[in-house]
Length: 126
Image 1 (cartoon, rainbow, N blue to C red):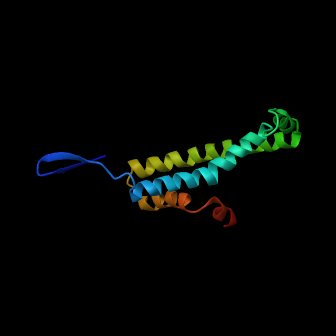
Image 2: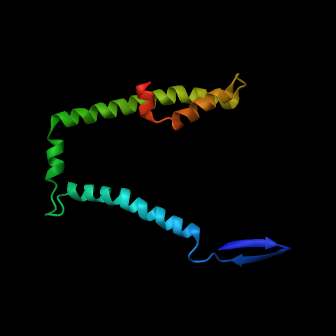
Image 3: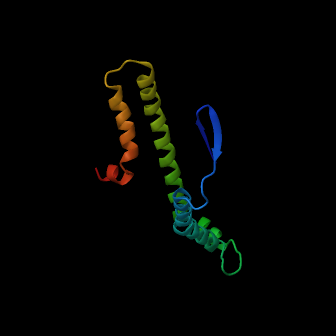
């Protein structure tokens, strides 16, 4: 429903059931389900032993491997270190840009935007 106002009066206009916007929305939703949700659902079901009997033996096998536990510990240490470093660097920079009149505040903002624009693997290669 859309409300259109003109000439001092408001009237409600309903969109047709088969509009281009609805077709695009349903097409995008169907694509998302087929390309993302179906494989993720299959992976979760397989982790529990489906399509056979439901079991947790796969999870027990993963937790029993010391090399995987070490990899998990390393991942958590690196993630916590990066998060702490980001806060230590980012909070003062944000305060400087927002509260002071430093030269080129737009340059600092652009660096923040660039970190979201360029994928991580490009930064790793550089």
